[in-house]
Image 1 (cartoon, rainbow, N blue to C red):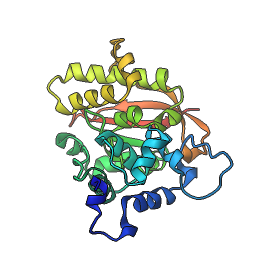
Image 2 (image 1 turned 135 degrees about the vertical axis):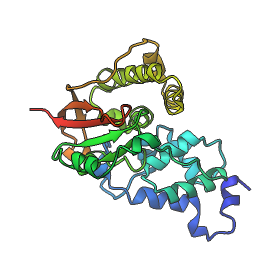
Image 3 (image 1 turned 30 degrees about the horizontal axis):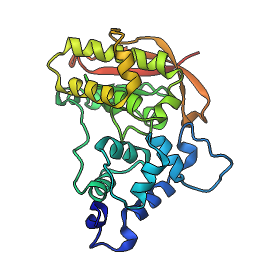
Length: 273
């Protein structure tokens, strides 16, 4: 009996992992998935092939999971799949139990000191940036506060609150961040290097660096350039988001830092003229 079968042996067959995966991918709205080419198919939900591509694995690899066959499913793969399927914490928990027989580690949270910067006045300041997206992130780029446009533009935040992990570890980011390698990946990695040098004792930064360099071969190649930059401020970048109907939108990245928390970033994405 496989791990998956053993985990669900006492359950109703209709509650098998395969049935749950088919339900989860069937409820997704293809119009909300960036870079998804439908090949003329208009049925609701996502196909196995589409889920596999968005998760960054082969069709066969994903199909093995949906068929309930035992395989060496890594935590990275399961987390990418949970993100692709937009699973809640409870659903992610079930995915792990059925796939590898144990619960997942808790999702990474923001630094406690940074979270103290988010109070009523700070939230009102975020909200006052409308219609521009605005957010707060900690020293390791975990987003812990934002306004409504930020959530509308980037609906992945509840599932992967870390900006850098999303940009490097989830395939859909390449479709949303226009000119991903030169305009986003290189500056992002240069910022991470600067932050690691500035805060050498920061465990969240060390873990972020390890996760990205392990999970993205192109990031490892770019990292070897040894580029360093503090943070873009006022620089123009382009996005291609489902919120805008996949039309390119240029934004100026406005970067600030509250005096009460010097490692907190207050970022506004100002739509460029």
